[in-house]
Image 1 (tube, helix red, strand yellow):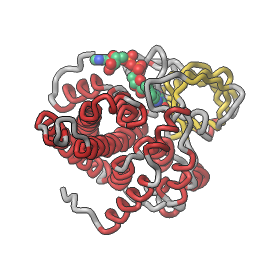
Image 2 (cartoon, rainbow, N blue to C red):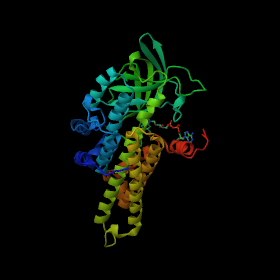
Image 3 (cartoon, protein in one colour):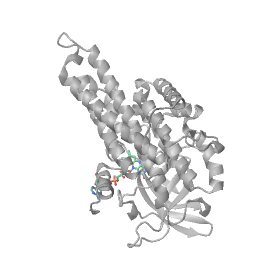
Length: 386
Ligand SMILES: Cc1cc2nc3c(=O)[nH]c(=O)nc-3n(C[C@H](O)[C@H](O)[C@H](O)COP(=O)(O)OP(=O)(O)OC[C@H]3O[C@@H](n4cnc5c(N)ncnc54)[C@H](O)[C@@H]3O)c2cc1C
């Protein structure tokens, strides 16, 4: 492994530091309080070509790797704009990796350039009665001539208010207990549509995106909009899930480091016993520990992205990276709040928003427990426990 960054990668980081710094704490606090999408930020990402980074050059993108996308996610987050990196998941990850790896030539021709131009997607996988057990999904797509007609329900589906397309994981054949993954298909629908109903949830954080209960009742998707092979979506899904986990992990690393920087700045300025509170080891040590955790997690994120880009199995490295990154970042954000004292609990500080937003990463896009299940089974070779 050689993580010595090239000149282009350093230039990419610098561009992201610049873009990210143009949107300050006041901006992100207003996004949080008004519960609106960061449209201005996303437009700038699009203008600067960042949403097309990983799309092949022949479709108007830059043809870079997941490693580069993670660098961008981390750099934007490190200067305080981590809340905007959800655009990377909604665009290049859900849309780009899915279509690049599983799309037909016609789908690539139509969709990949649209993603470079900032098109957002929703990914509808989770259902109320299946949760972490995705093989148990019930949403069914019945063939009707040259269309599929969907009936069913999804839950916690993000970005429906902005998405132009939706990738729906559904059954096109009844569940077979001997092969639970068979019969699951990925269909690509257009939004909005009158046969889709959704209702946003009130959430603890991540107010920069809407997260919804979603109902399909007669939603029609042309049969040619199957992505990959009908009934065999599983393998393809992993081409998207690993990048999603790593882009979010990189965001966590950046946000954790941003929180620490805020804490150090505050502690250096603030005196309550005649000296800056930064001189107290009780505040220094936990921040130093947080830095150690973030640096170690960062290397694992880089390693997993590097494996993915080489086309190697990155599954275990990815979940390890994701677990390490979100825990390190949450610890950092928690310590930042503690360092700021009462001020850290106040919305204006921004660190409480970061903590609330990061808390979700212990469940999303994969929960702590499912990470540990994966490691127990696939790294330790222990029996599957569930
Ligand atoms: C803000 C937000 C945005 C989201 N966006 C999307 C989206 O855009 N698209 C989408 O499809 N989904 C989305 N999700 C859903 C998210 O991926 C799920 O919440 C997650 O996969 C877990 O499913 P669940 O919430 O149903 O938990 P459950 O599966 O009900 O699990 C509940 C608890 O039990 C634990 N558990 C479950 N099974 C086991 C086991 N075998 N061993 C040990 N512990 C276990 C879990 O880890 C968890 O702690 C989003 C969720 C949130 C909160």
